[in-house]
Image (cartoon, rainbow, N blue to C red; front, side, top):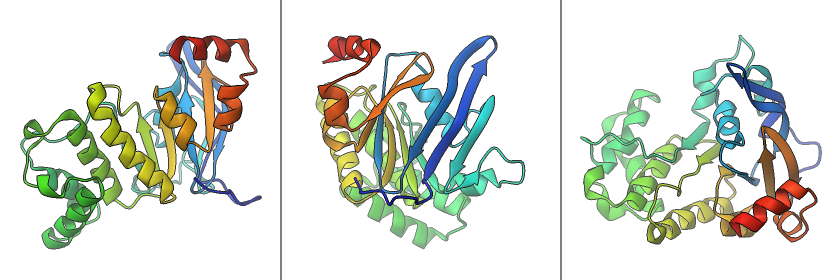
Length: 250
């Protein structure tokens, strides 16, 4: 949550982004900018292209056309070191994707050792700090099967934070959780927002979007239909499609 500097290079920028799977056009000429420290929530019906858009930001999906920029660096350019850029972009998925045979501590530390080349002691020190940040200091030795879904998702967040990213992407991270477990995960995300982390959040949690986001982006049929502050978007939806969507989910 921030007051973006006028004229500053966006932390994330999508320029005319399109994505086609076969004959299906999933994203259509999407333009979006996210300033450093800004929280942008992306909402829309299932199949609207939200998650594909998020996955294009770190090139888990390669755009059919258009550009993706991180701090002005074009990720789609051939000269760009994609692996180096990805270390600056943390991503948390709907499914936790934890290694089941490893403890929470090792799940968080492994990328620090494999990607950043840190030693065992240093990687585990950072991993313990990140687990403490998400409220799991006492669960470091537990394996995923010994943790609740909400705790596993918080381990996944700690793992992404351990790489010290410039931006965090969240893709429906609460949708696989039981309702009573959602609150803890959203509390961690709210804390990150309050500390100034740049975040792009695909979510069905309208309360979170209303309370935490600097802007809310409504996507429908692969296009950005509205992009406004939450009080304006929820309080006075301009497009009939957004009004219809909000009537269904609120």
